[in-house]
Length: 462
Image (cartoon, rainbow, N blue to C red):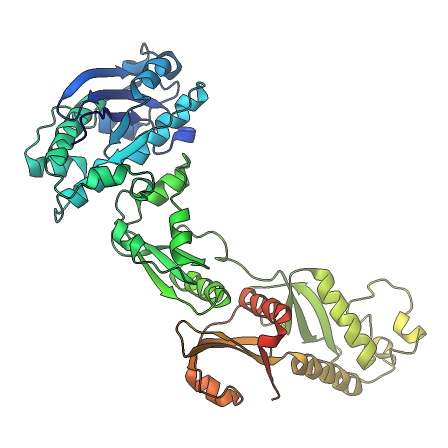
């Protein structure tokens, strides 16, 4: 035990779960020398906002109780003087620390403390308990708490708990947690450091799971360990980040041969698991599509329109202009009518008839059978132009190669092959790789990658 260390054991009560939109209603700070509590500070705080009814029920702190209490700015200097140059200790330390750092910052004080979390230390020093919540942990150890969900009572219980952790720390976990390079203090309270240590430094997809093992977040990485650790590098006081960290209990992962495969697998897994904390890609679809339909006069018509749910466009686009440019190419190559393709929308004479590219379908001068054949040929040409190719790249281990297959412009699947397996036969590839659901986001990823690295692209003729 380091006798020179002074600890500040802290507990706060608040109006809500994240610092940026909530206030502190009560704070207790116990100064601990590693053996006993030397000094106590405790006060109610006027949060200068309403205390929600469920918080009042939980803590017993009412709006009336804090009405005459000092505001946080009135006690900020005292709080900062107690905390600075101390080791900040709390049960789920990042919650208390994020609140005090945020509110002290608003008062002009820059809180910079080393931190210890009694939840994380409890899991290491006294492993195997059914729960490490403050109430159940203390009950298991016979620690009485005479003021549950009040700052003073919880801080006193945490101080006794911390003393027991100091006395039972046979493997020097506390010292290790305080080392400058330790990742432990920045991790969510319910996540084991062992899970971080098991992550490889390779491309892949990682999954954060909650207490019931449900996937709550899916991410991709060029380096799995670095990317996962980066999630915990800052303690953002916002509600989303705080809830996110609190709900992470475990991590699993899938290694990938390349970063591109990690991007693709991430998209597939987000669509599969629909994780609570993923925002992007849940509803990603291209905004516009190229459609073909037959009008009342029997003429096949091509049109660019907003992509409709459950529709099957011939092709999709991010921007409407992309669609119009494609239709103009088809009009020139197959003598289609700009009016029937909705390129010309006014009542003026057909520009296609003026330059002889339109053969009069819009005026009924060309019968629909002949015109429709050219539209059909244009559609076939469009589909034939969609490439079939494979991206052959590095595997996950030596002696392995990865393969991503696009068939007629649509993502077919991906997987890993022995380096001795031939990639010249598309039927062999299909037998070796896994088929996955396709989407436009994946298609764009692959086509962009193939454009940047043509040497990795293997074309097939079907």
